[in-house]
Length: 302
Image 1: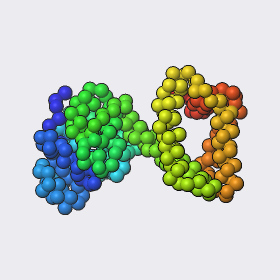
Image 2: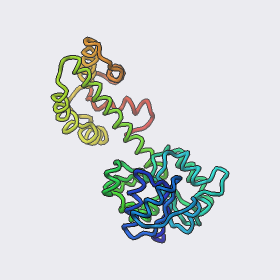
Image 3: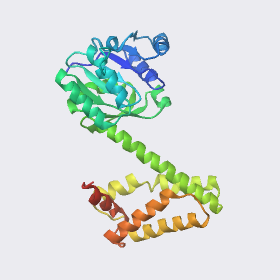
Image 4: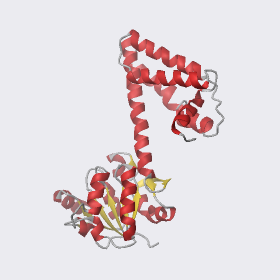
């Protein structure tokens, strides 16, 4: 596969602006487009590169086009046109690649790839983890979905914008992992907030709780490196804590919340899940066997 040298970049917003800037700095031939002409003008003034007056212009002659847009519906419209000839697909030749760095629905990404495949145009999903600060210093973590040879082809481009390139699997896999990572983070955030508001109602100090929870939950006891990897993925299931005891402790947390009239919908639901798992699998088995509760319900094995 030929190396990627000429790139169109669509979406010069808070993230796209610095990301495209790194491409120019790396010596790539970059043409940028945005619905806001002033954003394109500001980018070219600051970084150089070329300004495109249309989506077709941004894609014309490009080895790859990078999209950094709100969602998969916008990406699809920009790429396929939705009845308009002014679209990325109209400007790309066979052998080109669409690199979607937006955060999108993975089923939409797969659908887009299927639509472009007959034209000989490939699609790679490459969403990022990290905000504007990380985009500015090129330290984004970039997940990539696509065939291995294709990922290798675009890897030098991605390295100009990020510190880690994680190949997740086939097309759509990176978008799926990005959404799941944000889901885990979102759960952890409300989990901590819920616990601390219960604690405040009970009379505990916020700063003390934050420091204690960091030690007890975020560090050495983080569930992924400390329980899922060594116990669940290996099928050892030997963390040393019985499922029944965890169910009991979560129940105590819920009772505490109720005793001080605290809002605890997550804790209430988690308590039900742990109690049900303990009843079905046995209270004496290791806590990490809670994974089997989800595996049985979902029909997969971690």
